Image 1 (cartoon, one colour):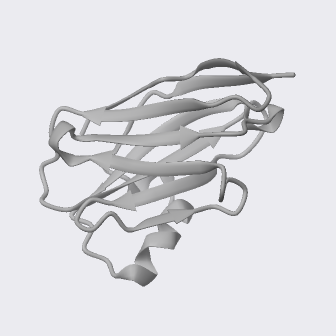
Image 2: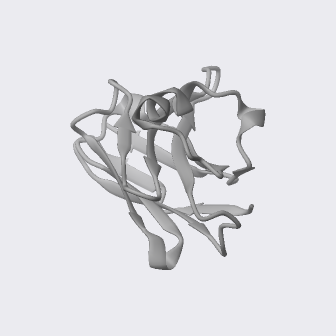
Image 3: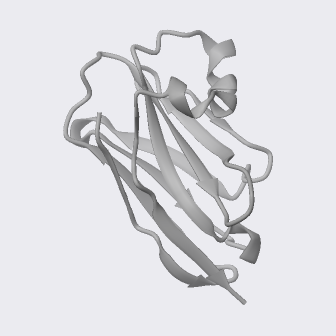
Length: 132
């Protein structure tokens, strides 16, 4: 599954951006989309995920209260609204998909800890730079 991220850019501290993750189609009736980021020299960080069937979401503590994930199933697009951005949010942001995700509520949070290879598709990322 090919994913395409967009919406990144340069923003000042305290500003907002909305990232998009779009796919032409998803070959399964249910799936989960996760957002990650990676800054130079740092490990990948899981940020948030959402399940298509019921909109169940989960957030990492580092972004809880500032970032919001949502989806437009008709457009096969998932959004990440990022508010009150800080310099430490500077990174390349990626989305990834887990197809045939039929897990329960207890399975949504661990998505952010899954290995890269466990996902069925990744985007190429979009750069976010937060300047003070």
